[in-house]
Image (cartoon, rainbow, N blue to C red; front, side, top):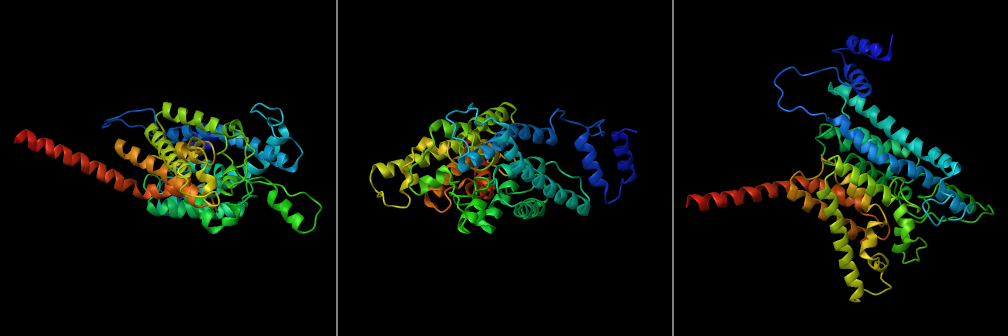
Length: 407
């Protein structure tokens, strides 16, 4: 008997019981739903929630694979075993050693993210008696891409439980949540375990353990895992070129370093009409605007070079887009169709404020010079308000036109 037949038999066996949602979810994930409509339908289309989620995952996979190579590459560069590459196609980057080390660190993050998150989803589906929703398929992929490579797995598991329960299920599940679940998980990690989400050592595999050995008297050289944002925040010199930043040959979160692959993913999402180009464009415009304002402050000499904010204020406005996670957040986080604004004008306002606030937090928070996830979560809360006033504005304009016609 085939696997499909076995699953169908189990599905019929447990039909109407508490375990029915779990078997339905497994059957639907592996195969197309066998329910078809016969009458009363108004719209027929090939897309559904599962296909939408799969398209986003396809856009994220290149970032995941590159992140594995980069995790191993940054590890060996920090240890001094290989020299830093001068190009994206350098032989020292695309090696099996880099991939093996990266897979050894990144794949457990993916497994824990999906395993724990889907377990919580199945548990709530069984308890509440509703179908398991596909919304976590993308969240489970996003979470490993926005955390440091050496984050302890138990911390990630605790954060995933918190994010799925508090960020999603308490609001009613997929389509009902007001906060992006992946960013809720990131926020929990940041506030609950700040030393594992910031600092100089968390972004390069092995840096924390190696420094602990040095502190215990081992005759080893310390290694640096400092990101570009950390260097700028401390007004230090940055050794990375523009191409390093663009291709992604820099320390950082697993999936956020390669701006080239993020742009490819953005074009793919826009082409498939999954991601909103208005939100992406307005987020980048907002970031550039805030960067220009800070550059103007520095040019006018309203702030001295000794100021703790000077380093990131002095970053060329355009460079804010290729350092940190502003581009990743704009493409994969801000465009979440559930938590973003729904009106066209609201999308422009929503995205602009995300970019504007992100750079503001980045500059004014030297201890943790990255504010994209905080800005997106803040605007998730205000997105319904933005849409409300956009709709009310349209209603008022139409009422005025109606009065003019009837006058």
